[in-house]
Length: 215
Figure 1 (cartoon, rainbow, N blue to C red):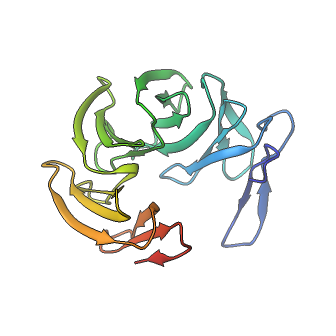
Figure 2: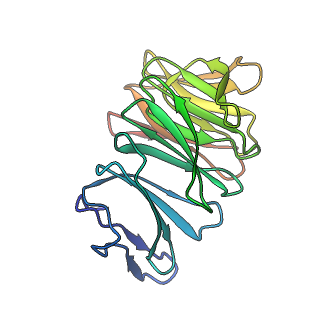
């Protein structure tokens, strides 16, 4: 995205670029969050115009435009089956949408939420992270099931058993998603924010404010 409300999707196999910036469909302000569906057929974008758009990733056409956000969406994540999309926004709410109908299924109050991530093995389990803690939610009930150590972001491993999150003192934590026990602590030289597991879960890449990336 380029801050104009347009979204451009580059096709890595062909080098072809899809421009989803049609004025009738695009966001009216800059984009903050993007997420591909598990099947790769759809792309969700969240903008400063307080809306979420679901696109056809191949044609670049906006299939659905959801305007129920109270603030701009800062994090988006599809459930493993692609049937739900979770959005976190600056109004301290997590919204869960039905991707087929566009219906708002649930709104969850989440203080200072900054990221959301569905479990890859359970479509009902969602992790969120804020300024002080990370929380695991039951999406169907909207109830928190566990509070785990860590803050700023929470990412499930591919098998859903581990959550990667950051902690005070420039530390990355690997936490057991069930027992909440800290499995591993990894020290960094500056605050840790983005992280991503490899497909098989054997590796974790972390990014730091000092410009370094560790694997």
